[in-house]
Image (cartoon, rainbow, N blue to C red):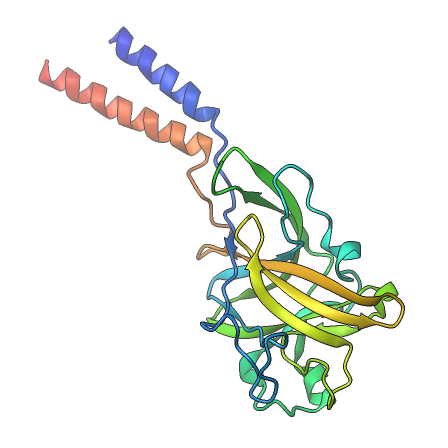
Length: 253
C-alpha cells in the first residue's frame, strides 16, 4: 500500500508541473484555388484572396514568423496601422454582389476590427516542439457561422495611410490604385499563409507589406479551447484513478 501511495504522489507531482498549452491556434485557410483571380484581372500578381471563416472561432492577425529565435515584430508600426478607428477589418463575401460595387457601398460593407483588443499568440515549431515564439495578435472578430471574407488593412501614415484589401482592383492601365500587387503564395516558418500587399507609396515608393491570420477555436460557453487538461485537472484525474484502483485491490483481498 505504501508503494502505491508513493507512486501516486510522484505521478501527481510530475503532471502538476507540466505546462499544458491553454490556447491552440490554427493557420487560417483560404479558398480552394490558392491563385484565384478576378474575372477581369486574371494575372498572377493580382490574386483574389478569400479567407474562410469557421463557426465558433475567433480570428487574430499578426506579423509573419520568420524564425523561432527572435521576437516577432509588432504588426502595428512594422507592416500596417492597426491602432485607432477603422484601420483594419473584413468584408463578408456574401455582402458583395458583383465586382463593380461603388466606393460608397464598399465602405459601408467593411466590418472594422478593434485594435485595442490584442493578445499574445504563441507559435510552435512543427519540427521542434521546444521552439516557440510569441507575436502580438490583433482581434479581427468572432464568427458564429461558416463563411468567406475579404480582408481590409490600412498602411502606415508614412506609406500614405491607404486602405487596401484582398477584393478590389489591383493597379493596371484602367485602374490607378495604390495597390500594385496582391499575393498569397508562401507560408512562414510557423505554417501560416503570408498575405502580401504590394503598395505604390508616394512617400516611400514601392513597398511590400505582409501579415498572417490564425484561428482560435472557442468552446460552447464562449471560452477559449485548451490543448490539454490543465495541470490541476490532470492531477485530479490521477488521484481519482489511483483511489479507484486501491479500492479494487482492497476488495479482492
